[in-house]
Length: 402
Image (cartoon, rainbow, N blue to C red; front, side):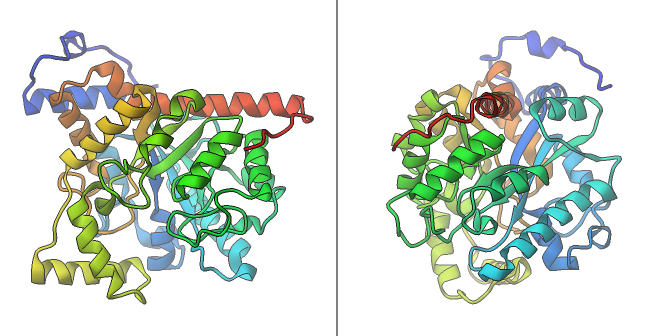
């Protein structure tokens, strides 16, 4: 069992200024006793691209040239990781199920190949149990509902395979929900989309509305019977990126109980980076793999000196979301995906304690840091589980109208 202790540092006044070393020690103590739940990491797709899905060949036990491996996850004190099992929205309809199952298999293989480090978690209680046993709890999050193939019943099938959240869309709109970066076809959710949200509530799968349009966000909040999450997003009031969350949506999370898991994607955090990357990627629209993106970005950086986001940018978004939605509605969803342009100080998965140390130096209390780290997400998960149990006992429950 993990040794649980309370140090003298945690008894000190958290509002007093603290030095960098003391702040880091306190951050490490908090993360040693409260699981850091990271809502999004795209490692399974990176393994798909780099080694054809062969986890052993990817060699997670040693430091790699990307941003995620076991030594740095341990250094970063990750307590629970949602592995994104993403498939592109452009995938041909006949291939969506096959590719989705392959991604789930890769994520499961991460656990099976390294059982001394990872263990599958299916509930909030599982996360705490695995964390207390000294391992990293591992969960699966489907990014984009494309593999449902327009069937609400398929939600149950993927839940049985271990999927515990589903992002309704990625960057391509589905036949039942509009994506933030996709064609606005429906003005939000269709009737099928509402049925899918209800089936997710009934099954116990968390509804993730990152990547969706504001109208889809609002429609989902209108009809869901359980808390939603944004597995990786930031605040639109600070950076007017279409992937970010507007304040009028943030304000609704108090009533819903949902959580925005703040991402480290630079273009969501910094208007300067967003402007630079918009121009950069627009000139290379045909480039598709992570390695190709890396090469383009590194070449641009070498020639022009790319603009970088920072830990302070991440904190600005965290604090804005806290101020609008409330302290009970924020979390962390890094979205590490193998790129070298992540914020300065958060270049890889080892950086989480540095983020929490920086928050401590801004005056954050231990109680609020524990909520951000994982307590908010654990509470939301338990609420989702509770609603599912209620709906399974009362299947006649009618989905609310938008």
